[in-house]
Length: 569
Image 1 (cartoon, rainbow, N blue to C red):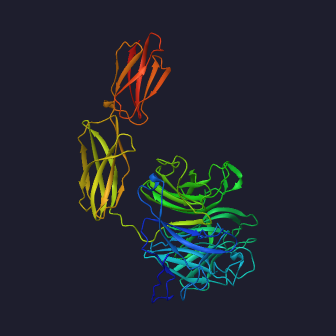
Image 2 (image 1 turned 90 degrees about the vertical axis):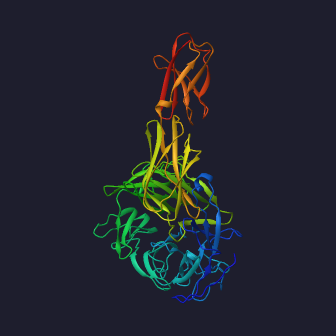
Image 3 (image 1 turned 90 degrees about the horizontal axis):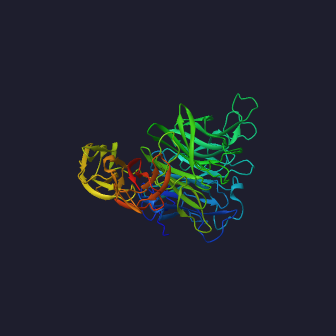
Protein backbone atom coordinates (compact mmCIF):
# COMPACT_ATOMS: atom_id res chain seq x y z
CA UNK A 1 0.00 0.00 0.00
CA UNK A 2 1.06 3.62 -0.44
CA UNK A 3 2.44 5.16 2.76
CA UNK A 4 2.46 8.78 3.86
CA UNK A 5 4.53 10.06 6.76
CA UNK A 6 3.29 12.81 9.03
CA UNK A 7 5.46 15.08 11.17
CA UNK A 8 4.12 15.52 14.71
CA UNK A 9 5.48 17.86 17.34
CA UNK A 10 5.19 15.31 20.10
CA UNK A 11 7.32 13.06 22.21
CA UNK A 12 8.40 10.88 19.32
CA UNK A 13 8.67 13.26 16.36
CA UNK A 14 7.33 11.03 13.56
CA UNK A 15 4.54 8.63 12.88
CA UNK A 16 5.63 5.30 11.47
CA UNK A 17 2.84 4.94 8.90
CA UNK A 18 -0.64 6.11 8.05
CA UNK A 19 -3.73 4.24 6.90
CA UNK A 20 -5.16 4.88 3.45
CA UNK A 21 -8.26 6.28 5.17
CA UNK A 22 -9.45 6.68 8.77
CA UNK A 23 -10.48 3.55 10.60
CA UNK A 24 -14.23 3.20 11.03
CA UNK A 25 -15.54 2.82 14.60
CA UNK A 26 -17.52 -0.42 14.84
CA UNK A 27 -15.28 -2.33 12.41
CA UNK A 28 -12.75 -4.81 13.76
CA UNK A 29 -8.97 -4.92 13.24
CA UNK A 30 -6.92 -8.12 13.05
CA UNK A 31 -3.17 -8.34 13.70
CA UNK A 32 -1.98 -10.34 10.66
CA UNK A 33 1.51 -11.82 10.28
CA UNK A 34 3.05 -12.38 6.86
CA UNK A 35 2.69 -10.85 3.42
CA UNK A 36 1.82 -14.19 1.82
CA UNK A 37 4.95 -14.30 -0.34
CA UNK A 38 6.86 -16.87 1.73
CA UNK A 39 6.05 -19.56 4.27
CA UNK A 40 6.19 -18.46 7.90
CA UNK A 41 9.05 -19.83 9.97
CA UNK A 42 11.38 -19.13 12.89
CA UNK A 43 12.27 -15.50 12.13
CA UNK A 44 10.71 -12.05 11.88
CA UNK A 45 7.89 -11.37 9.39
CA UNK A 46 5.97 -8.20 8.48
CA UNK A 47 2.82 -7.26 10.40
CA UNK A 48 -0.35 -5.81 8.90
CA UNK A 49 -3.38 -4.38 10.67
CA UNK A 50 -6.37 -5.52 8.62
CA UNK A 51 -9.60 -3.57 9.07
CA UNK A 52 -12.63 -5.82 8.51
CA UNK A 53 -16.12 -4.52 7.80
CA UNK A 54 -18.72 -5.23 10.49
CA UNK A 55 -22.37 -4.47 9.75
CA UNK A 56 -25.77 -5.63 11.06
CA UNK A 57 -25.70 -8.28 8.31
CA UNK A 58 -22.19 -9.62 8.95
CA UNK A 59 -23.27 -12.76 10.78
CA UNK A 60 -26.16 -13.34 8.38
CA UNK A 61 -24.09 -13.09 5.20
CA UNK A 62 -21.17 -14.90 6.92
CA UNK A 63 -18.72 -12.41 5.46
CA UNK A 64 -16.43 -9.73 6.88
CA UNK A 65 -14.35 -8.34 3.99
CA UNK A 66 -11.10 -6.42 4.46
CA UNK A 67 -11.62 -2.67 4.12
CA UNK A 68 -7.94 -1.71 4.25
CA UNK A 69 -4.58 -2.97 5.53
CA UNK A 70 -2.02 -0.89 7.40
CA UNK A 71 1.53 -2.14 6.85
CA UNK A 72 3.76 -1.61 9.87
CA UNK A 73 7.46 -0.79 9.25
CA UNK A 74 9.13 -4.15 8.65
CA UNK A 75 12.21 -3.81 6.43
CA UNK A 76 15.52 -2.51 7.75
CA UNK A 77 15.67 1.27 7.46
CA UNK A 78 11.93 1.70 6.77
CA UNK A 79 10.96 3.14 10.17
CA UNK A 80 10.94 6.96 10.29
CA UNK A 81 13.20 8.81 12.71
CA UNK A 82 12.19 8.23 16.31
CA UNK A 83 10.32 5.03 15.46
CA UNK A 84 11.29 1.37 15.22
CA UNK A 85 10.43 -1.65 13.13
CA UNK A 86 7.57 -3.78 14.37
CA UNK A 87 7.61 -7.36 13.13
CA UNK A 88 6.36 -10.69 14.49
CA UNK A 89 7.81 -14.14 15.03
CA UNK A 90 6.46 -16.34 12.26
CA UNK A 91 5.92 -19.38 14.48
CA UNK A 92 4.83 -17.39 17.54
CA UNK A 93 1.08 -17.92 17.43
CA UNK A 94 0.73 -17.08 21.15
CA UNK A 95 1.87 -13.48 20.59
CA UNK A 96 0.57 -10.55 18.56
CA UNK A 97 -2.62 -9.78 20.48
CA UNK A 98 -4.23 -6.39 19.98
CA UNK A 99 -6.46 -4.36 22.33
CA UNK A 100 -8.22 -1.00 22.32
CA UNK A 101 -7.29 1.64 24.88
CA UNK A 102 -9.74 2.25 27.70
CA UNK A 103 -10.70 5.67 26.29
CA UNK A 104 -11.27 4.12 22.85
CA UNK A 105 -8.77 6.36 21.02
CA UNK A 106 -6.00 3.88 20.13
CA UNK A 107 -5.23 0.27 19.32
CA UNK A 108 -2.13 -1.07 21.09
CA UNK A 109 0.00 -4.09 20.17
CA UNK A 110 3.59 -5.33 20.25
CA UNK A 111 6.35 -6.94 18.19
CA UNK A 112 10.10 -6.95 17.53
CA UNK A 113 12.58 -4.38 16.27
CA UNK A 114 13.93 -6.91 13.78
CA UNK A 115 13.97 -6.54 10.01
CA UNK A 116 11.87 -9.02 8.08
CA UNK A 117 14.50 -8.79 5.33
CA UNK A 118 17.51 -9.48 7.60
CA UNK A 119 16.18 -11.70 10.41
CA UNK A 120 17.52 -15.26 10.26
CA UNK A 121 17.01 -16.63 13.80
CA UNK A 122 14.21 -17.05 16.33
CA UNK A 123 13.66 -13.45 17.40
CA UNK A 124 11.93 -14.42 20.66
CA UNK A 125 15.27 -15.71 21.95
CA UNK A 126 17.16 -12.50 21.15
CA UNK A 127 17.41 -10.44 24.30
CA UNK A 128 19.08 -7.02 24.70
CA UNK A 129 20.05 -6.90 21.04
CA UNK A 130 16.42 -6.94 19.86
CA UNK A 131 14.01 -4.47 21.42
CA UNK A 132 10.37 -5.40 22.00
CA UNK A 133 8.31 -2.65 20.39
CA UNK A 134 4.92 -1.34 21.51
CA UNK A 135 2.87 0.14 18.69
CA UNK A 136 -0.25 2.28 18.60
CA UNK A 137 -2.66 3.39 15.89
CA UNK A 138 -5.35 6.04 16.29
CA UNK A 139 -8.67 6.40 14.45
CA UNK A 140 -7.07 8.59 11.76
CA UNK A 141 -4.73 5.70 11.00
CA UNK A 142 -1.56 7.28 12.42
CA UNK A 143 0.88 4.60 13.59
CA UNK A 144 3.46 5.14 16.34
CA UNK A 145 6.24 2.61 17.05
CA UNK A 146 8.47 4.81 19.19
CA UNK A 147 8.34 2.63 22.32
CA UNK A 148 11.12 0.03 22.20
CA UNK A 149 11.98 -1.84 25.41
CA UNK A 150 15.38 -3.38 26.12
CA UNK A 151 16.88 -4.46 29.42
CA UNK A 152 14.31 -5.88 31.83
CA UNK A 153 12.35 -8.00 31.24
CA UNK A 154 14.54 -9.02 28.29
CA UNK A 155 17.99 -8.95 29.87
CA UNK A 156 18.42 -12.47 31.29
CA UNK A 157 19.63 -15.40 29.24
CA UNK A 158 16.44 -17.44 29.10
CA UNK A 159 14.33 -18.80 26.32
CA UNK A 160 11.02 -17.14 25.70
CA UNK A 161 10.25 -13.51 26.42
CA UNK A 162 7.89 -13.31 23.47
CA UNK A 163 5.72 -10.14 23.63
CA UNK A 164 2.13 -11.19 24.03
CA UNK A 165 -0.32 -8.38 24.72
CA UNK A 166 -0.51 -4.70 25.67
CA UNK A 167 -3.19 -2.62 27.39
CA UNK A 168 -3.40 1.15 27.72
CA UNK A 169 -5.60 3.77 29.30
CA UNK A 170 -5.12 6.39 26.59
CA UNK A 171 -2.40 5.31 24.11
CA UNK A 172 0.42 7.00 26.06
CA UNK A 173 0.96 4.67 29.01
CA UNK A 174 1.15 0.91 28.73
CA UNK A 175 1.11 -2.34 30.66
CA UNK A 176 2.46 -5.32 28.76
CA UNK A 177 3.32 -8.96 29.33
CA UNK A 178 5.68 -11.45 27.75
CA UNK A 179 6.20 -15.18 28.07
CA UNK A 180 7.96 -16.08 31.34
CA UNK A 181 8.42 -12.45 32.40
CA UNK A 182 5.29 -11.20 34.20
CA UNK A 183 3.72 -7.78 33.74
CA UNK A 184 5.63 -4.51 33.16
CA UNK A 185 4.77 -0.83 32.66
CA UNK A 186 6.16 1.74 30.20
CA UNK A 187 5.24 5.12 28.75
CA UNK A 188 5.10 6.20 25.11
CA UNK A 189 8.63 6.57 23.74
CA UNK A 190 10.25 4.68 26.63
CA UNK A 191 13.31 2.46 26.25
CA UNK A 192 13.06 0.76 29.66
CA UNK A 193 10.14 -0.75 31.57
CA UNK A 194 9.14 -0.92 35.23
CA UNK A 195 8.16 -4.28 36.74
CA UNK A 196 4.62 -4.51 38.08
CA UNK A 197 4.11 -8.21 38.76
CA UNK A 198 7.25 -10.26 38.11
CA UNK A 199 7.14 -13.92 37.15
CA UNK A 200 9.41 -16.39 38.93
CA UNK A 201 8.88 -19.96 37.81
CA UNK A 202 10.31 -21.68 40.90
CA UNK A 203 9.24 -19.46 43.79
CA UNK A 204 6.83 -16.65 43.14
CA UNK A 205 5.83 -15.30 46.53
CA UNK A 206 5.06 -11.72 45.55
CA UNK A 207 4.56 -11.85 41.83
CA UNK A 208 2.55 -13.32 39.04
CA UNK A 209 2.26 -16.65 37.27
CA UNK A 210 2.97 -16.82 33.53
CA UNK A 211 0.46 -14.33 32.12
CA UNK A 212 -1.12 -14.88 28.70
CA UNK A 213 -3.43 -12.03 27.65
CA UNK A 214 -4.30 -8.77 29.39
CA UNK A 215 -7.59 -6.89 29.36
CA UNK A 216 -9.39 -4.07 31.19
CA UNK A 217 -12.95 -3.93 32.49
CA UNK A 218 -14.43 -1.20 34.71
CA UNK A 219 -10.94 0.20 35.31
CA UNK A 220 -9.44 -3.08 36.55
CA UNK A 221 -6.72 -5.14 34.87
CA UNK A 222 -7.42 -8.81 34.24
CA UNK A 223 -5.27 -11.57 32.76
CA UNK A 224 -5.71 -15.11 31.49
CA UNK A 225 -3.25 -17.83 32.52
CA UNK A 226 -2.38 -21.47 32.08
CA UNK A 227 -0.02 -21.66 34.98
CA UNK A 228 0.52 -22.30 38.68
CA UNK A 229 2.35 -20.23 41.26
CA UNK A 230 3.16 -19.97 44.94
CA UNK A 231 1.12 -17.18 46.56
CA UNK A 232 2.61 -15.34 49.49
CA UNK A 233 1.97 -17.24 52.73
CA UNK A 234 0.77 -20.38 50.94
CA UNK A 235 3.60 -22.58 52.10
CA UNK A 236 4.86 -24.95 49.44
CA UNK A 237 1.56 -25.73 47.70
CA UNK A 238 1.34 -24.21 44.23
CA UNK A 239 -1.99 -22.77 43.10
CA UNK A 240 -3.30 -23.26 39.57
CA UNK A 241 -4.75 -20.16 37.94
CA UNK A 242 -6.73 -19.47 34.77
CA UNK A 243 -8.14 -15.99 35.33
CA UNK A 244 -7.10 -13.26 37.78
CA UNK A 245 -7.17 -9.52 38.43
CA UNK A 246 -4.12 -7.32 39.01
CA UNK A 247 -5.83 -4.29 40.54
CA UNK A 248 -6.69 -0.91 39.04
CA UNK A 249 -5.19 0.32 35.78
CA UNK A 250 -4.38 3.53 37.68
CA UNK A 251 -2.54 1.62 40.41
CA UNK A 252 -2.05 -2.09 39.66
CA UNK A 253 -1.13 -4.60 42.36
CA UNK A 254 2.21 -6.40 42.59
CA UNK A 255 0.37 -9.65 43.34
CA UNK A 256 -2.60 -11.18 41.59
CA UNK A 257 -6.06 -12.03 42.89
CA UNK A 258 -7.24 -15.37 41.53
CA UNK A 259 -10.92 -15.13 40.61
CA UNK A 260 -13.01 -18.07 41.79
CA UNK A 261 -14.98 -20.30 39.49
CA UNK A 262 -13.07 -20.12 36.20
CA UNK A 263 -12.01 -23.71 35.54
CA UNK A 264 -8.30 -24.56 35.56
CA UNK A 265 -9.03 -27.96 33.97
CA UNK A 266 -11.79 -29.01 31.60
CA UNK A 267 -14.80 -30.48 33.38
CA UNK A 268 -15.20 -32.93 30.49
CA UNK A 269 -11.52 -33.97 30.55
CA UNK A 270 -10.15 -33.32 34.02
CA UNK A 271 -6.65 -34.52 33.15
CA UNK A 272 -6.17 -31.56 30.80
CA UNK A 273 -5.56 -27.93 31.75
CA UNK A 274 -7.86 -25.37 30.18
CA UNK A 275 -6.13 -23.13 27.63
CA UNK A 276 -7.48 -19.55 27.83
CA UNK A 277 -6.28 -16.61 25.74
CA UNK A 278 -7.98 -13.33 24.85
CA UNK A 279 -11.23 -12.52 26.68
CA UNK A 280 -13.98 -9.93 26.98
CA UNK A 281 -16.19 -8.99 29.96
CA UNK A 282 -19.58 -7.40 29.29
CA UNK A 283 -22.46 -6.19 31.44
CA UNK A 284 -25.81 -7.62 30.38
CA UNK A 285 -29.17 -7.42 32.09
CA UNK A 286 -28.63 -9.15 35.43
CA UNK A 287 -24.85 -8.90 35.79
CA UNK A 288 -21.39 -9.43 34.31
CA UNK A 289 -20.58 -12.12 31.76
CA UNK A 290 -17.09 -13.28 30.76
CA UNK A 291 -16.24 -14.81 27.39
CA UNK A 292 -12.84 -16.52 27.02
CA UNK A 293 -11.22 -17.83 23.82
CA UNK A 294 -9.93 -21.34 24.53
CA UNK A 295 -7.83 -22.96 21.80
CA UNK A 296 -8.50 -26.62 22.64
CA UNK A 297 -9.19 -28.80 19.58
CA UNK A 298 -9.66 -32.21 21.22
CA UNK A 299 -13.19 -33.32 20.36
CA UNK A 300 -13.54 -34.89 23.81
CA UNK A 301 -13.38 -31.41 25.38
CA UNK A 302 -16.90 -30.02 25.50
CA UNK A 303 -15.71 -26.62 26.74
CA UNK A 304 -13.46 -25.81 23.76
CA UNK A 305 -14.06 -22.59 21.80
CA UNK A 306 -15.59 -19.43 23.28
CA UNK A 307 -16.41 -20.17 26.91
CA UNK A 308 -19.10 -18.23 28.75
CA UNK A 309 -19.13 -17.49 32.49
CA UNK A 310 -21.51 -15.35 34.58
CA UNK A 311 -20.55 -13.68 37.86
CA UNK A 312 -23.01 -15.09 40.41
CA UNK A 313 -22.60 -13.98 44.04
CA UNK A 314 -18.89 -13.31 43.55
CA UNK A 315 -18.09 -16.57 41.71
CA UNK A 316 -17.78 -17.09 37.97
CA UNK A 317 -20.22 -19.82 36.90
CA UNK A 318 -19.62 -21.71 33.66
CA UNK A 319 -22.64 -21.46 31.34
CA UNK A 320 -21.43 -23.27 28.21
CA UNK A 321 -19.42 -22.61 25.08
CA UNK A 322 -19.70 -21.67 21.41
CA UNK A 323 -17.39 -23.80 19.29
CA UNK A 324 -14.75 -21.88 17.32
CA UNK A 325 -11.89 -24.20 16.45
CA UNK A 326 -8.50 -23.29 18.01
CA UNK A 327 -9.55 -19.69 18.69
CA UNK A 328 -7.22 -17.41 20.66
CA UNK A 329 -8.22 -13.85 19.78
CA UNK A 330 -11.56 -12.48 21.00
CA UNK A 331 -13.51 -9.24 21.17
CA UNK A 332 -17.19 -8.43 21.54
CA UNK A 333 -19.89 -5.92 22.40
CA UNK A 334 -23.47 -6.03 23.60
CA UNK A 335 -26.73 -4.15 23.52
CA UNK A 336 -28.65 -5.40 26.53
CA UNK A 337 -28.71 -9.20 26.33
CA UNK A 338 -27.72 -9.28 22.65
CA UNK A 339 -24.00 -10.09 22.50
CA UNK A 340 -21.93 -10.15 19.29
CA UNK A 341 -18.55 -11.93 19.47
CA UNK A 342 -15.63 -12.05 17.02
CA UNK A 343 -12.82 -14.55 17.48
CA UNK A 344 -9.65 -15.50 15.61
CA UNK A 345 -7.57 -18.62 15.22
CA UNK A 346 -4.40 -18.52 13.17
CA UNK A 347 -6.44 -19.24 10.04
CA UNK A 348 -10.06 -18.20 10.70
CA UNK A 349 -12.14 -15.19 11.70
CA UNK A 350 -15.29 -16.34 13.52
CA UNK A 351 -18.49 -14.55 14.49
CA UNK A 352 -21.27 -15.53 16.88
CA UNK A 353 -24.32 -14.14 18.64
CA UNK A 354 -25.34 -14.94 22.21
CA UNK A 355 -28.90 -13.89 23.01
CA UNK A 356 -29.35 -15.86 26.23
CA UNK A 357 -28.38 -13.16 28.72
CA UNK A 358 -27.06 -13.60 32.22
CA UNK A 359 -26.23 -17.04 33.63
CA UNK A 360 -27.79 -18.98 30.76
CA UNK A 361 -26.23 -21.32 28.16
CA UNK A 362 -25.17 -19.47 24.99
CA UNK A 363 -27.99 -19.16 22.48
CA UNK A 364 -27.53 -17.99 18.89
CA UNK A 365 -30.32 -17.39 16.38
CA UNK A 366 -28.40 -18.91 13.46
CA UNK A 367 -25.15 -20.61 14.33
CA UNK A 368 -26.43 -23.33 16.69
CA UNK A 369 -23.63 -24.26 19.07
CA UNK A 370 -20.85 -23.17 16.68
CA UNK A 371 -19.56 -19.81 15.50
CA UNK A 372 -19.74 -18.99 11.79
CA UNK A 373 -16.59 -18.46 9.71
CA UNK A 374 -16.40 -14.88 8.40
CA UNK A 375 -12.97 -14.93 6.72
CA UNK A 376 -9.97 -17.20 6.17
CA UNK A 377 -6.31 -16.19 6.26
CA UNK A 378 -4.48 -16.47 2.95
CA UNK A 379 -1.64 -18.93 2.46
CA UNK A 380 1.60 -18.01 4.24
CA UNK A 381 -0.19 -15.63 6.63
CA UNK A 382 -1.62 -15.94 10.12
CA UNK A 383 -4.28 -14.14 12.11
CA UNK A 384 -3.33 -13.33 15.70
CA UNK A 385 -5.38 -11.00 17.97
CA UNK A 386 -8.54 -9.02 17.17
CA UNK A 387 -10.08 -5.81 18.53
CA UNK A 388 -12.62 -3.19 17.59
CA UNK A 389 -11.25 -0.21 15.69
CA UNK A 390 -10.39 2.93 17.68
CA UNK A 391 -13.04 5.57 18.08
CA UNK A 392 -16.37 5.17 19.81
CA UNK A 393 -19.37 4.72 17.50
CA UNK A 394 -21.97 7.38 18.26
CA UNK A 395 -25.27 5.58 18.65
CA UNK A 396 -28.05 7.64 17.14
CA UNK A 397 -30.51 6.00 19.51
CA UNK A 398 -30.50 3.84 22.61
CA UNK A 399 -33.68 2.17 23.77
CA UNK A 400 -34.92 2.75 27.30
CA UNK A 401 -37.22 -0.26 26.98
CA UNK A 402 -37.22 -3.01 24.38
CA UNK A 403 -39.87 -3.33 21.69
CA UNK A 404 -43.09 -4.69 23.25
CA UNK A 405 -45.88 -6.32 21.23
CA UNK A 406 -49.31 -6.74 22.83
CA UNK A 407 -52.58 -8.26 21.62
CA UNK A 408 -55.31 -5.63 22.20
CA UNK A 409 -58.88 -6.16 20.91
CA UNK A 410 -57.60 -8.49 18.21
CA UNK A 411 -54.88 -6.12 16.97
CA UNK A 412 -51.11 -6.04 17.49
CA UNK A 413 -50.07 -2.92 19.44
CA UNK A 414 -46.34 -2.12 19.45
CA UNK A 415 -44.65 0.18 21.96
CA UNK A 416 -41.09 1.28 22.69
CA UNK A 417 -39.24 4.07 24.48
CA UNK A 418 -35.87 5.72 23.88
CA UNK A 419 -33.30 6.82 26.45
CA UNK A 420 -31.36 8.94 23.92
CA UNK A 421 -31.91 10.13 20.35
CA UNK A 422 -29.20 11.97 18.41
CA UNK A 423 -29.44 12.55 14.66
CA UNK A 424 -32.15 9.91 14.51
CA UNK A 425 -34.26 9.98 11.35
CA UNK A 426 -36.96 7.36 11.81
CA UNK A 427 -38.05 4.00 13.13
CA UNK A 428 -39.01 1.49 10.48
CA UNK A 429 -41.50 -1.12 11.71
CA UNK A 430 -40.97 -4.51 10.08
CA UNK A 431 -43.16 -7.62 10.24
CA UNK A 432 -42.54 -11.31 9.59
CA UNK A 433 -44.56 -14.51 9.62
CA UNK A 434 -41.58 -16.80 10.16
CA UNK A 435 -39.18 -14.70 12.26
CA UNK A 436 -36.63 -14.62 9.42
CA UNK A 437 -37.95 -12.69 6.42
CA UNK A 438 -39.18 -9.23 7.40
CA UNK A 439 -41.21 -6.67 5.42
CA UNK A 440 -41.48 -2.95 6.18
CA UNK A 441 -45.04 -1.95 7.10
CA UNK A 442 -44.68 1.52 8.62
CA UNK A 443 -42.19 4.37 9.15
CA UNK A 444 -42.44 6.47 12.31
CA UNK A 445 -40.56 9.79 12.29
CA UNK A 446 -38.17 10.20 15.22
CA UNK A 447 -38.61 13.00 17.76
CA UNK A 448 -34.84 13.35 18.35
CA UNK A 449 -35.33 13.49 22.10
CA UNK A 450 -36.11 10.78 24.68
CA UNK A 451 -39.61 9.67 23.77
CA UNK A 452 -42.25 6.97 23.99
CA UNK A 453 -43.78 5.57 20.79
CA UNK A 454 -46.64 3.24 19.86
CA UNK A 455 -48.13 1.80 16.68
CA UNK A 456 -51.16 -0.41 15.99
CA UNK A 457 -50.88 -2.84 13.11
CA UNK A 458 -54.22 -2.59 11.24
CA UNK A 459 -53.69 -5.76 9.21
CA UNK A 460 -55.41 -9.03 10.10
CA UNK A 461 -53.63 -11.10 12.72
CA UNK A 462 -52.16 -14.43 11.78
CA UNK A 463 -51.48 -17.29 14.17
CA UNK A 464 -47.97 -16.07 14.98
CA UNK A 465 -46.26 -12.90 13.78
CA UNK A 466 -43.02 -11.16 14.57
CA UNK A 467 -42.03 -7.49 14.69
CA UNK A 468 -38.78 -5.52 14.92
CA UNK A 469 -37.60 -1.91 14.65
CA UNK A 470 -35.17 -0.68 12.03
CA UNK A 471 -33.63 2.36 13.75
CA UNK A 472 -32.38 4.70 11.02
CA UNK A 473 -30.01 7.64 11.64
CA UNK A 474 -29.77 10.77 9.49
CA UNK A 475 -26.63 9.48 7.73
CA UNK A 476 -28.50 6.41 6.51
CA UNK A 477 -26.93 3.94 8.94
CA UNK A 478 -29.25 1.69 10.89
CA UNK A 479 -29.46 -0.96 13.58
CA UNK A 480 -32.19 -3.41 14.51
CA UNK A 481 -34.01 -3.87 17.78
CA UNK A 482 -34.78 -7.24 19.27
CA UNK A 483 -37.75 -9.18 17.92
CA UNK A 484 -41.18 -9.06 19.60
CA UNK A 485 -43.70 -11.87 19.01
CA UNK A 486 -47.50 -12.00 18.96
CA UNK A 487 -49.36 -15.32 19.21
CA UNK A 488 -53.02 -15.08 18.22
CA UNK A 489 -54.68 -18.21 19.53
CA UNK A 490 -58.04 -17.16 18.05
CA UNK A 491 -56.67 -17.39 14.52
CA UNK A 492 -55.63 -21.00 15.04
CA UNK A 493 -58.98 -22.33 13.84
CA UNK A 494 -59.23 -25.74 12.24
CA UNK A 495 -61.85 -27.62 10.20
CA UNK A 496 -62.06 -30.92 8.28
CA UNK A 497 -63.93 -31.43 5.00
CA UNK A 498 -65.66 -33.66 4.16
CA UNK A 499 -66.53 -35.11 7.53
CA UNK A 500 -66.94 -38.10 7.60
CA UNK A 501 -63.95 -38.61 5.30
CA UNK A 502 -63.11 -41.40 2.87
CA UNK A 503 -59.59 -41.46 1.36
CA UNK A 504 -58.59 -37.80 1.53
CA UNK A 505 -59.36 -34.92 3.88
CA UNK A 506 -58.93 -31.17 3.41
CA UNK A 507 -57.93 -29.48 6.65
CA UNK A 508 -58.57 -25.73 6.93
CA UNK A 509 -56.30 -24.04 9.47
CA UNK A 510 -54.69 -20.76 10.44
CA UNK A 511 -51.86 -19.28 8.37
CA UNK A 512 -48.93 -21.65 8.67
CA UNK A 513 -45.55 -20.38 9.84
CA UNK A 514 -42.18 -22.11 9.65
CA UNK A 515 -42.32 -25.47 11.42
CA UNK A 516 -46.13 -25.79 11.43
CA UNK A 517 -47.46 -29.35 11.25
CA UNK A 518 -50.68 -31.37 11.09
CA UNK A 519 -50.81 -34.36 13.41
CA UNK A 520 -53.37 -37.18 13.35
CA UNK A 521 -53.90 -39.15 16.54
CA UNK A 522 -56.32 -41.68 17.95
CA UNK A 523 -58.92 -40.55 20.47
CA UNK A 524 -56.60 -41.87 23.18
CA UNK A 525 -53.71 -39.72 21.91
CA UNK A 526 -51.57 -42.21 19.97
CA UNK A 527 -49.82 -40.44 17.07
CA UNK A 528 -50.57 -42.06 13.69
CA UNK A 529 -49.18 -39.52 11.18
CA UNK A 530 -47.45 -36.13 11.01
CA UNK A 531 -47.58 -33.86 7.95
CA UNK A 532 -45.41 -30.74 7.49
CA UNK A 533 -47.43 -27.69 6.43
CA UNK A 534 -46.15 -25.27 3.82
CA UNK A 535 -45.42 -21.78 5.14
CA UNK A 536 -48.30 -19.44 4.28
CA UNK A 537 -50.83 -22.25 3.68
CA UNK A 538 -54.34 -22.10 5.16
CA UNK A 539 -55.53 -25.44 3.74
CA UNK A 540 -53.70 -28.74 3.55
CA UNK A 541 -54.85 -32.05 2.04
CA UNK A 542 -53.87 -35.23 3.86
CA UNK A 543 -54.11 -38.89 2.88
CA UNK A 544 -56.24 -40.91 5.32
CA UNK A 545 -56.83 -43.97 3.13
CA UNK A 546 -54.81 -46.21 5.47
CA UNK A 547 -56.97 -45.37 8.51
CA UNK A 548 -59.55 -47.89 9.67
CA UNK A 549 -63.15 -46.84 10.35
CA UNK A 550 -63.53 -44.85 13.55
CA UNK A 551 -63.01 -41.42 15.15
CA UNK A 552 -59.73 -39.48 15.08
CA UNK A 553 -58.21 -36.17 16.15
CA UNK A 554 -56.36 -33.82 13.79
CA UNK A 555 -54.18 -31.10 15.38
CA UNK A 556 -52.70 -28.01 13.76
CA UNK A 557 -49.53 -27.10 15.67
CA UNK A 558 -47.95 -23.68 15.08
CA UNK A 559 -45.27 -22.45 17.44
CA UNK A 560 -46.37 -23.12 21.00
CA UNK A 561 -50.11 -23.13 20.16
CA UNK A 562 -52.28 -26.06 19.05
CA UNK A 563 -55.82 -26.20 17.58
CA UNK A 564 -57.68 -29.53 17.30
CA UNK A 565 -60.74 -30.98 15.56
CA UNK A 566 -62.36 -34.42 15.50
CA UNK A 567 -63.27 -36.27 12.34
CA UNK A 568 -64.81 -39.63 11.47
CA UNK A 569 -63.94 -42.18 8.82
